[in-house]
Image 1 (cartoon, rainbow, N blue to C red):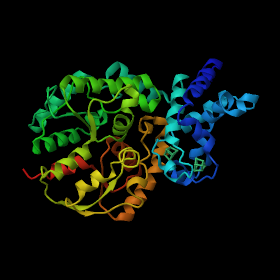
Image 2: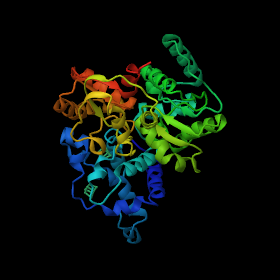
Image 3: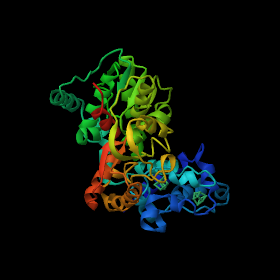
Length: 415
Ligand code: SF4
Ligand code: SF4
């Protein structure tokens, strides 16, 4: 049960956040309901609570009470304890901040931005799924949500070097690019790290990892703990400045790309001193320059668009350019690219045990999409999507393959 003080903290934070572009959104909803069927949580369950517009309610109430014209006459409703408790799972477990609802909203309301603001108020009040909020705190104490400390990073890289008979440059001053990692990859999918290294070496790129700024994911942003969001961005910025690199490459992680590419400067409070590219964008540039030589990829494949890379990131074309002339039998899903369905685990939902059943239900949408293509395998370029989908594939005992785009590329390099 929340205390009165917690409720007041949340209400005050809501009020503080309803400046800038948020307030017009709160006035703009015409309750047309078009966003409902765009949201995978509603689509998978038919539960009206999952209608995106419903997620606007707590912050809208707080704004009406404190700032809107209604507040002048004391007419706005007060935020109540039971409402905050009711909305907690809507704001955390059932919003991946995928932005699909905004793509259909006639009023252009950025619901994922409002969910992000609402999470900030909930976090300030000490709310949020315990496991997820702890993972965010690990960023402060261990440097990474999955506990990938700097020492562990070095150990894991040495192990991967031995296993794969290759070298990973570390803290190399003056390298062309700083390559970051997602701790999900390091702990669950290390082959994708090896694959990135092989592709960059093959193309003759001067690159490095950093022991100071390595974690690409930003659980601070996802959890609404903006001090941690700034800490994550700052670590990478300071590492890049120290190593004098001009480009930071984000690995196969959607939200890591979205946060650094589109919010990094605002979070930091100054211009980023480097260009930010997703690994697919950087590899696409290498391909354009004729620096990637690949054998044709056999078998039929389809591509899952990570929301923060395609719809929210503006980089849907990069993966397709890489697959063009490489995948012999590439089949697009329907819908695809900027309107593709979310995996169900973005926005930190993957890290919330309480959302597990819901994620599995949502994954049925993806299964239907892939089966409609007839493709044997699905590839993607986000380790978080991959983990979400791998768990659901196991849950449903689905007989389709799932792989990472960088891994299939590295497996088909012409040496
Ligand atoms: S951002 Fe995505 S998950 Fe969140 S309400 Fe909109 S469609 Fe649903
Ligand atoms: S589509 Fe936009 S205007 Fe319509 S109900 Fe949803 S948020 Fe409101």
